[in-house]
Image (cartoon, rainbow, N blue to C red):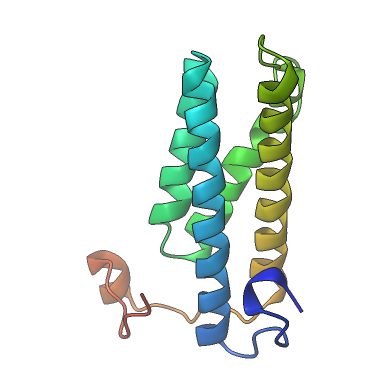
Length: 141
């Protein structure tokens, strides 16, 4: 059971998996764009750019490899000195609470998506032609 399948069983095939991943993608994009607006409002251009890049990367991802790369990108900002965990909005109060809430939601949802990619039905192999042209034999979305 998961958030995006509306209490249906886990996906049993690639088409169901792709639909589930599409739901994750839309939600992550929405949360990241909300974060971008919050950060822009507080003139935090460095972090705004990072979340904007993530929203674009996850939204444009067409393969599990690209999805995992986008997830690893956003997860990479959470550790070490000068990381997202060390940052706070000078406004504090409600804005900082919103930043923390959105940051946690993005991190956790990205982690759920990563787990789903790793444990769910596997992406079908693409031919060299499909890789070169960016096309697949079937259009899913």
